[in-house]
Length: 162
Image 1 (cartoon, helix red, strand yellow):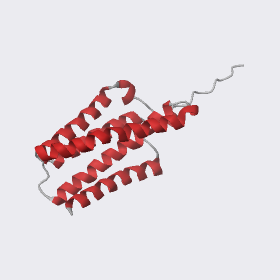
Image 2 (cartoon, helix red, strand yellow):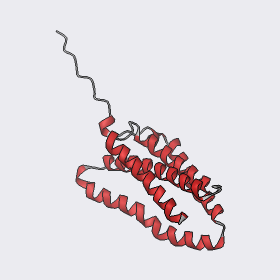
Image 3 (cartoon, helix red, strand yellow):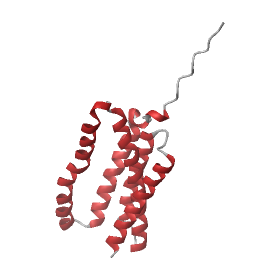
Image 4 (cartoon, rainbow, N blue to C red):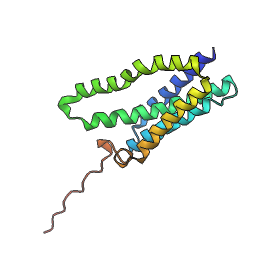
């Protein structure tokens, strides 16, 4: 029951982040928001290793979902905005592969590791990896400063002097 509730809490967190972006739009500095979203998710995953009970574990899962939602609703649009209009379909296919291909390897690996190592160790490893990826994105100036086109300031019109 706890696993299902935690998975539901994760989904609610992602849905809330997605709904906020649908309602208010993305953050002006989408790269910065995506990096902090990944750091939040990583910290939450690592904190899940120390959660003393089901209630706290589910609350941490909600936070992981929020961080994951912020990451995905900001990183995806950055990638899509950078691709040429005539390649949008191909770019979406690349995004889909980038999301699902690692899972083909990761899910069986996680299953094998879960039989060998304690879950707390795996959560710490997984959270540390996600946190490291977010920190690397935060340290990468091009990603950290990336903005979506609608947030790009319009150039000021030229003034005629006469």
